[in-house]
Length: 121
Image (cartoon, rainbow, N blue to C red; front, side, top):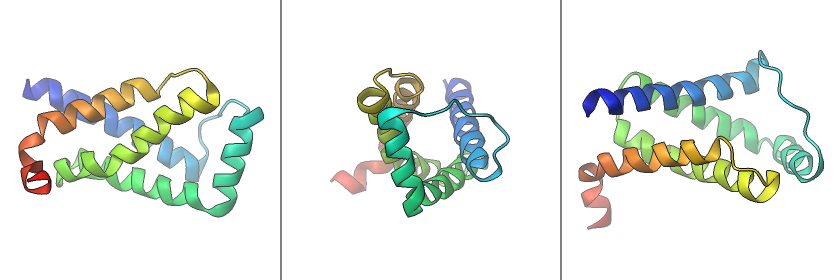
């Protein structure tokens, strides 16, 4: 089970590392946005909010890769995973990456539940 969890962790971290790095470096071509998705991303981009989110994604990805406080990293990235799922469902109308990202995030929080006892007790 530990091997499976490590594979999920590294795959998850790779996704966040890839997309957060792409935000700053622009090495992947992204599909053009239109409608509500364009409005949403334009607003978030113009305020600097997306840059802050991408920095947090990058930090969490590194934390997961180097095994530095992984239980904390899983909690830090949960709001971002939730936002990805909500964006896919409510703005784009087609859940794509949001479902597996959220599923892995929730699974890993469940697997690390022993580390969170003091938070909820």
